[in-house]
Length: 139
Image 1 (tube, rainbow, N blue to C red):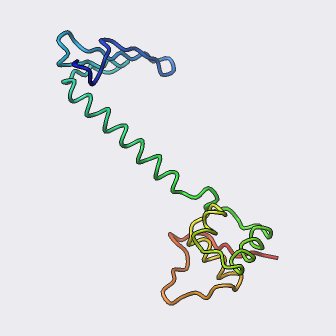
Image 2 (cartoon, helix red, strand yellow):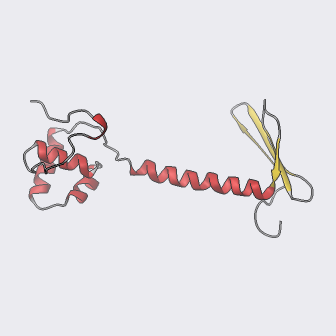
Image 3 (spheres, one colour):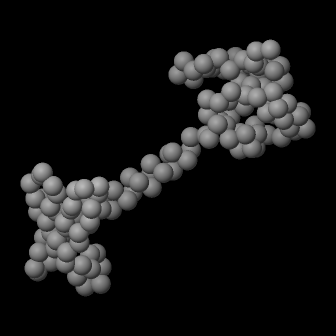
């Protein structure tokens, strides 16, 4: 295939007990995917290359969007974490930096600062996104 694209004629693999086969037919213009309990699918190689590229792009996008979800999203604030937040904010640390340090969204940082009285809720400041739980500390 002129140095680009697929470089094999036949590729087989297993997923659990199921075996799959991808085979480029002689001439290299078409390829067939054979899967268990499904009819074979024959497409031009250029279509397979486009499909594989689309899957790679989708996986990269999904990975980026998953990493955008904060690790501690929805977790309760411990007294120690709240104290660290208060001290850092009082020392001038930015909301963005606090969000990074605490692995939470800027919204969560601002909300916690409002709850502990270090930040005033601005007019139009949303109460909770998507009907989330009340994060107020008890005790």
